[in-house]
Image 1 (cartoon, helix red, strand yellow):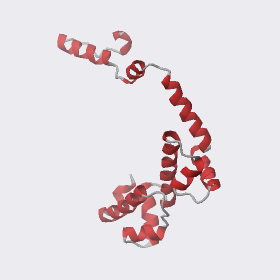
Image 2 (image 1 turned 90 degrees about the vertical axis):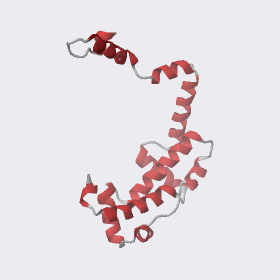
Image 3 (image 1 turned 30 degrees about the vertical axis):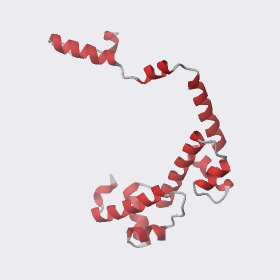
Image 4 (image 1 turned 60 degrees about the vertical axis):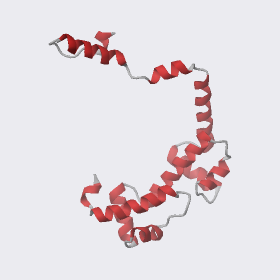
Length: 162
């Protein structure tokens, strides 16, 4: 991991800038502003941020904005234009193009898919959905029984238990 080669104090400063971007991803975060937050030079900040986090600061910010936009598309009834402006985009066209470049889908398709998935789960009884998310306890119970019986052979496979 790139973290190991950097000074811990520098990493704290970089994390401070990253945390600010996370808290206010809708704001403009040019490198000079981020460098001031980190109290390092602009060139050193840009180089160190990419080394520490694996992506340049601008790409990190775009990713955070797209993540937030995806959540808003899925969880709210806001229009796509409102979501674009709330997540920090200056124009709907730039938002749509960048969203499609990063996710592979346009915002409307993501919203439609999320609604279809939510609608589909609405027809499945809640007890079935809950059961599908439970861990497979058969293996755990049989393993406990085998240990309690003092069996010396290796662990049973799931096929043998069922």
